[in-house]
Length: 217
Image (cartoon, rainbow, N blue to C red):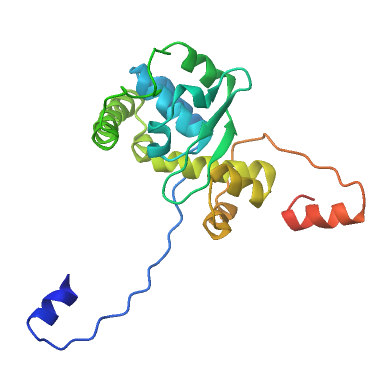
């Protein structure tokens, strides 16, 4: 806008160069995420936050989730991508599946009414989440929970998947990134309290080299 203003008034100027400083996203602990989910009294909001935790999907992707994309038997959720991401199918926890079974209704979408405007309804839902989060923060006395946004949970899932598997390609697939450069930030984000790992055993020299390259030794 400033550039257009100067051109309109025939003012000569040199556009300043700016190099953006990339900061690492904040990652909450698993017990904090669980405390937030369990503390939210509104079932729909609590289930949505739980789904964000389990899938790492964008809020807009989950908001468009349809019932036929939830496989209750195999415990998977199929995510339809947005923002140039890739579609993916993600394994979720049994606890989330059980929660999804309870509010199931005769409608197309999981989290909103079929005739809702998807953009406006998600904005309204986001404000309700912020109010519910503030209530939990006040009750538990943990102000860190105020930093847990839907995007935070996406970063949480990505960093946790890499920490558990040390497999950057797997993490890319779960996150739905088209470029692995977007996934690389999770390499330096390490949750400190999770002990759940994927173990891979090398059968030969070539396999050992591959595992070492992936960070599994």
